[in-house]
Image (cartoon, rainbow, N blue to C red; front, side, top):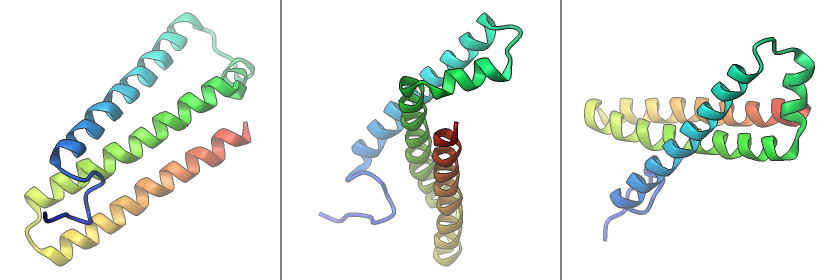
Length: 115
């Protein structure tokens, strides 16, 4: 069995399931935020800060951030593997873009726990 170190999952099926599960989490998070904005038309900083100070919202946001990281990691690997044929360029782009995704995840955690 040949494995690829650049993929997040163990196989194509595993990657497919991670992509779909992370998409569901991101969709649920986006729908929740949209519903919150619609039910709070005059949203203030105090309300916004209060929402993100709840532990349940912090957990939901961390799950969404992790889902975004996994989704980006696998999606970038798939797109770069399909369209960038030069191995060195593809590895460089994967490194830079995955580093950016990881930094977004860490920044999100720092901002979230600062509330």
